[in-house]
Image (cartoon, rainbow over all chains, first blue to last red; front, top):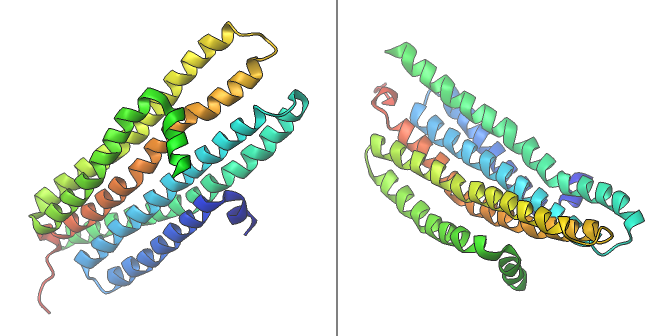
Length: 125
Length: 133
């Protein structure tokens, strides 16, 4: 929860995209179990889409956070810069942590679902 | 709205090609997604690959723009008063990141559409035809 609060608005967007991806992942595996190849591939595409969007938004959130940190430290005393930089970077990295936390597993599992479907179709031929 | 305008001012000349790319990619995503849904599997996969590659181009351009800006900043800093160098570097680094942020924002929708279209296109391949029960 603290991670979400530190990440700011981009964190909420990442969480929304990530949860959308998790739902699509569940649907992908449901279709895989039911041997419905076309629907499984469609949902796997959606999983990859949501995963990559979460990762990109997380990365954009990190850049936006760092941008604000650099803008802020230009206006503070030199002795406070290091401390402010460390604290600011920690907060800015929260967005990327959240984005990677959702994005990397979604991308991996989405690609794995696609590969599994291809392997199954290859075995049938 | 004012933050977008200030971002535009801070981004400098690199914002023009980035804005052109971002504005071009949004309608392109919609058009290729629509065309891909209504076309054969081969075309759908082709459009998906185009969207994925084109979608990453603004992010790459934004990152290149940031690095080129930082190179110019370092040249300027070398001639500045040593007492002001840290302040100038901090302010300039924050401003240089604008292009990367803008590029990444423009990459989200085309990449999402590209992956969705890839799933649709691959699902239409003849090997995934469902046999009747």
